[in-house]
Image 1 (cartoon, one colour):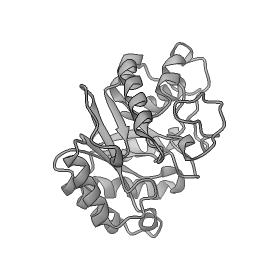
Image 2 (cartoon, rainbow, N blue to C red):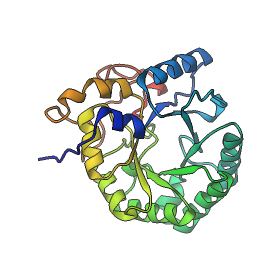
Image 3 (cartoon, one colour):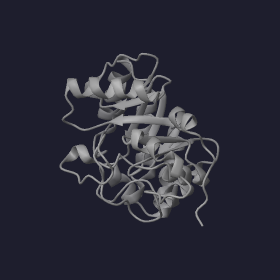
Amino acid sequence: MTEHAEITPQQFLQIADHTLLASDTTAAELDEFLVAAEQLGVRRVCVLPSLLPVEKRGREIVTVVGFPSGAHAAEVKAAEAHRAVAAGADEVDMVINLGLARAGDWAGVEAEVRAVREACQGRVLKVILETAALSDSEIVSACQAAEHGGADFVKTSTGFHPAGGATVHAVRLMAQTVGDRLGVKASGGIRSAAAVRELVAAGATRFGVSATAAILDTWSGAVAGGAAANDAAADEPAAAGAPADEPPADERAADY
Protein backbone atom coordinates (compact mmCIF):
# COMPACT_ATOMS: atom_id res chain seq x y z
CA MET A 1 0.00 0.00 0.00
CA THR A 2 1.28 3.47 -0.86
CA GLU A 3 2.10 5.66 2.11
CA HIS A 4 0.39 9.04 2.29
CA ALA A 5 1.73 12.00 4.23
CA GLU A 6 -0.41 14.26 6.38
CA ILE A 7 -0.41 17.63 4.66
CA THR A 8 -3.17 20.20 4.55
CA PRO A 9 -4.20 22.30 1.55
CA GLN A 10 -2.77 25.40 3.25
CA GLN A 11 0.54 23.67 3.83
CA PHE A 12 0.58 22.62 0.18
CA LEU A 13 0.03 26.21 -0.95
CA GLN A 14 3.10 27.23 1.06
CA ILE A 15 5.35 24.74 -0.78
CA ALA A 16 3.81 24.91 -4.26
CA ASP A 17 5.45 26.92 -7.04
CA HIS A 18 2.36 27.76 -9.14
CA THR A 19 3.73 27.54 -12.65
CA LEU A 20 3.23 29.03 -16.11
CA LEU A 21 6.04 28.09 -18.50
CA ALA A 22 4.42 27.86 -21.92
CA SER A 23 6.78 29.54 -24.39
CA ASP A 24 3.96 31.37 -26.20
CA THR A 25 2.46 32.98 -23.10
CA THR A 26 1.03 36.43 -23.79
CA ALA A 27 0.95 39.40 -21.45
CA ALA A 28 -2.82 38.98 -21.09
CA GLU A 29 -2.40 35.30 -20.19
CA LEU A 30 0.24 36.20 -17.63
CA ASP A 31 -2.12 38.72 -16.04
CA GLU A 32 -4.87 36.08 -15.86
CA PHE A 33 -2.44 33.62 -14.30
CA LEU A 34 -1.35 36.12 -11.66
CA VAL A 35 -4.94 36.95 -10.76
CA ALA A 36 -5.67 33.23 -10.39
CA ALA A 37 -2.54 32.80 -8.26
CA GLU A 38 -3.73 35.54 -5.93
CA GLN A 39 -7.14 33.89 -5.64
CA LEU A 40 -5.55 30.50 -4.90
CA GLY A 41 -3.36 31.99 -2.20
CA VAL A 42 -0.08 30.48 -3.38
CA ARG A 43 3.15 31.77 -1.90
CA ARG A 44 5.17 31.58 -5.15
CA VAL A 45 4.69 31.74 -8.88
CA CYS A 46 7.12 30.37 -11.46
CA VAL A 47 7.29 32.10 -14.85
CA LEU A 48 9.62 32.38 -17.81
CA PRO A 49 12.55 34.80 -17.47
CA SER A 50 11.34 36.69 -20.54
CA LEU A 51 8.19 37.63 -18.60
CA LEU A 52 10.11 39.34 -15.79
CA PRO A 53 9.75 41.66 -14.01
CA VAL A 54 6.44 40.61 -12.48
CA GLU A 55 4.56 42.55 -9.83
CA LYS A 56 5.02 40.52 -6.65
CA ARG A 57 1.98 41.54 -4.60
CA GLY A 58 3.41 39.66 -1.61
CA ARG A 59 4.42 36.60 -3.62
CA GLU A 60 7.91 35.27 -4.32
CA ILE A 61 8.93 34.99 -7.97
CA VAL A 62 10.59 31.86 -9.32
CA THR A 63 12.05 31.64 -12.81
CA VAL A 64 13.96 29.14 -14.95
CA VAL A 65 17.30 29.25 -16.78
CA GLY A 66 18.69 26.96 -19.45
CA PHE A 67 15.06 25.97 -19.96
CA PRO A 68 13.82 23.53 -21.05
CA SER A 69 16.68 21.63 -22.74
CA GLY A 70 19.60 22.49 -20.47
CA ALA A 71 21.82 22.43 -23.56
CA HIS A 72 23.24 25.89 -22.97
CA ALA A 73 26.80 26.88 -22.15
CA ALA A 74 27.37 27.41 -18.44
CA GLU A 75 28.17 31.09 -18.98
CA VAL A 76 24.88 31.56 -20.83
CA LYS A 77 22.95 30.01 -17.94
CA ALA A 78 24.86 32.22 -15.52
CA ALA A 79 24.12 35.34 -17.56
CA GLU A 80 20.44 34.39 -17.71
CA ALA A 81 20.38 33.91 -13.94
CA HIS A 82 22.10 37.25 -13.36
CA ARG A 83 19.53 39.03 -15.51
CA ALA A 84 16.66 37.22 -13.79
CA VAL A 85 17.86 38.26 -10.35
CA ALA A 86 18.22 41.85 -11.54
CA ALA A 87 14.63 41.66 -12.79
CA GLY A 88 13.34 40.59 -9.38
CA ALA A 89 13.54 36.79 -9.28
CA ASP A 90 13.68 35.39 -5.74
CA GLU A 91 14.50 31.84 -6.84
CA VAL A 92 16.12 30.29 -9.90
CA ASP A 93 15.51 26.80 -11.28
CA MET A 94 18.30 25.76 -13.68
CA VAL A 95 18.34 22.76 -16.01
CA ILE A 96 21.50 20.67 -16.08
CA ASN A 97 23.18 19.68 -19.31
CA LEU A 98 21.88 16.14 -19.81
CA GLY A 99 24.67 15.38 -22.26
CA LEU A 100 27.21 15.95 -19.49
CA ALA A 101 25.19 13.75 -17.14
CA ARG A 102 24.84 10.90 -19.62
CA ALA A 103 28.58 11.09 -20.32
CA GLY A 104 29.33 10.88 -16.60
CA ASP A 105 31.00 14.29 -16.61
CA TRP A 106 29.97 15.16 -13.09
CA ALA A 107 32.72 17.74 -12.74
CA GLY A 108 31.17 19.53 -15.72
CA VAL A 109 27.71 19.42 -14.14
CA GLU A 110 29.10 20.72 -10.87
CA ALA A 111 30.92 23.54 -12.66
CA GLU A 112 27.80 24.79 -14.42
CA VAL A 113 25.81 24.64 -11.18
CA ARG A 114 28.52 26.63 -9.45
CA ALA A 115 28.52 29.23 -12.24
CA VAL A 116 24.78 29.76 -11.83
CA ARG A 117 25.11 29.68 -8.04
CA GLU A 118 27.50 32.64 -8.21
CA ALA A 119 25.20 34.51 -10.58
CA CYS A 120 22.20 34.03 -8.26
CA GLN A 121 23.66 36.42 -5.68
CA GLY A 122 22.30 34.53 -2.69
CA ARG A 123 18.90 33.65 -4.14
CA VAL A 124 17.56 30.13 -3.82
CA LEU A 125 18.91 27.83 -6.54
CA LYS A 126 17.14 24.65 -7.62
CA VAL A 127 18.79 22.24 -10.04
CA ILE A 128 16.56 20.35 -12.49
CA LEU A 129 17.88 16.86 -13.21
CA GLU A 130 15.27 15.37 -15.62
CA THR A 131 15.23 12.22 -13.50
CA ALA A 132 13.00 10.30 -15.92
CA ALA A 133 15.85 10.43 -18.46
CA LEU A 134 18.50 9.21 -15.98
CA SER A 135 19.35 5.89 -14.36
CA ASP A 136 19.29 5.56 -10.58
CA SER A 137 23.07 5.83 -10.35
CA GLU A 138 22.99 8.92 -12.57
CA ILE A 139 20.31 10.51 -10.36
CA VAL A 140 22.49 9.96 -7.30
CA SER A 141 25.58 11.39 -9.03
CA ALA A 142 23.59 14.36 -10.38
CA CYS A 143 22.31 15.13 -6.87
CA GLN A 144 25.86 14.99 -5.53
CA ALA A 145 27.16 17.27 -8.30
CA ALA A 146 24.33 19.74 -7.64
CA GLU A 147 25.08 19.77 -3.92
CA HIS A 148 28.80 20.26 -4.48
CA GLY A 149 28.01 23.12 -6.88
CA GLY A 150 26.02 24.96 -4.22
CA ALA A 151 22.38 24.07 -4.97
CA ASP A 152 19.67 24.61 -2.37
CA PHE A 153 17.28 22.11 -3.97
CA VAL A 154 17.38 19.28 -6.47
CA LYS A 155 14.34 19.05 -8.72
CA THR A 156 12.92 16.17 -10.74
CA SER A 157 11.85 17.61 -14.07
CA THR A 158 11.11 20.48 -16.42
CA GLY A 159 7.79 18.89 -17.37
CA PHE A 160 8.78 19.20 -21.03
CA HIS A 161 10.99 16.11 -21.48
CA PRO A 162 9.37 13.21 -23.35
CA ALA A 163 10.75 10.72 -20.82
CA GLY A 164 8.27 11.96 -18.23
CA GLY A 165 8.05 13.83 -14.95
CA ALA A 166 8.17 13.18 -11.22
CA THR A 167 7.91 9.69 -9.75
CA VAL A 168 7.78 8.52 -6.17
CA HIS A 169 10.85 6.37 -6.81
CA ALA A 170 12.96 9.26 -8.09
CA VAL A 171 11.90 11.60 -5.29
CA ARG A 172 12.69 8.99 -2.66
CA LEU A 173 16.12 8.37 -4.20
CA MET A 174 16.86 12.09 -4.37
CA ALA A 175 15.77 12.61 -0.75
CA GLN A 176 17.92 9.71 0.41
CA THR A 177 20.92 11.15 -1.44
CA VAL A 178 20.72 14.76 -0.22
CA GLY A 179 19.28 14.06 3.22
CA ASP A 180 18.17 17.20 5.02
CA ARG A 181 20.97 19.26 3.50
CA LEU A 182 18.98 20.18 0.35
CA GLY A 183 15.32 20.42 -0.50
CA VAL A 184 13.68 18.17 -3.08
CA LYS A 185 11.27 19.73 -5.59
CA ALA A 186 8.87 17.42 -7.42
CA SER A 187 7.48 18.60 -10.74
CA GLY A 188 6.00 17.07 -13.86
CA GLY A 189 2.68 15.25 -14.09
CA ILE A 190 1.41 16.11 -10.61
CA ARG A 191 -2.33 16.61 -10.85
CA SER A 192 -3.96 15.30 -7.67
CA ALA A 193 -3.77 15.64 -3.91
CA ALA A 194 -3.06 11.90 -3.70
CA ALA A 195 0.06 12.42 -5.80
CA VAL A 196 1.14 15.31 -3.57
CA ARG A 197 0.74 13.21 -0.44
CA GLU A 198 2.67 10.28 -1.91
CA LEU A 199 5.50 12.54 -2.99
CA VAL A 200 5.67 14.32 0.37
CA ALA A 201 5.89 10.90 2.03
CA ALA A 202 8.75 10.06 -0.35
CA GLY A 203 10.64 13.22 0.63
CA ALA A 204 9.41 16.09 -1.55
CA THR A 205 9.64 19.47 0.19
CA ARG A 206 8.54 21.68 -2.71
CA PHE A 207 6.32 21.26 -5.77
CA GLY A 208 6.22 22.71 -9.25
CA VAL A 209 2.62 22.51 -10.45
CA SER A 210 0.42 24.13 -13.05
CA ALA A 211 -2.70 22.18 -12.01
CA THR A 212 -2.79 23.79 -8.58
CA ALA A 213 -6.54 24.45 -8.60
CA ALA A 214 -7.30 20.90 -9.76
CA ILE A 215 -5.08 19.49 -7.01
CA LEU A 216 -6.96 21.49 -4.38
CA ASP A 217 -10.27 20.30 -5.84
CA THR A 218 -9.21 16.67 -5.31
CA TRP A 219 -8.05 17.14 -1.72
CA SER A 220 -11.02 15.54 0.03
CA GLY A 221 -10.48 12.32 -1.91
CA ALA A 222 -6.70 12.34 -1.64
CA VAL A 223 -6.34 9.14 0.36
CA ALA A 224 -8.94 7.12 -1.50
CA GLY A 225 -8.18 8.43 -4.98
CA GLY A 226 -5.47 7.27 -7.34
CA ALA A 227 -2.25 9.26 -7.75
CA ALA A 228 -0.82 10.70 -10.94
CA ALA A 229 2.76 10.28 -9.74
CA ASN A 230 3.95 6.69 -9.40
CA ASP A 231 6.94 4.50 -10.06
CA ALA A 232 6.16 4.38 -13.78
CA ALA A 233 6.47 7.15 -16.35
CA ALA A 234 3.89 9.91 -16.22
CA ASP A 235 0.76 9.41 -18.30
CA GLU A 236 -0.59 11.83 -20.90
CA PRO A 237 0.28 15.42 -19.96
CA ALA A 238 -2.42 17.85 -18.99
CA ALA A 239 -2.56 21.41 -20.21
CA ALA A 240 -1.68 24.16 -17.76
CA GLY A 241 -4.94 25.37 -16.29
CA ALA A 242 -6.92 22.70 -18.16
CA PRO A 243 -8.74 19.60 -16.85
CA ALA A 244 -6.39 16.67 -16.24
CA ASP A 245 -8.19 14.54 -18.85
CA GLU A 246 -7.90 17.14 -21.60
CA PRO A 247 -5.45 15.95 -24.28
CA PRO A 248 -2.46 18.18 -24.98
CA ALA A 249 -2.44 20.29 -28.12
CA ASP A 250 1.00 21.87 -28.04
CA GLU A 251 3.92 22.82 -25.82
CA ARG A 252 1.50 24.57 -23.45
CA ALA A 253 0.37 21.09 -22.43
CA ALA A 254 3.66 20.15 -20.78
CA ASP A 255 3.46 17.97 -17.68
CA TYR A 256 4.67 20.72 -15.36
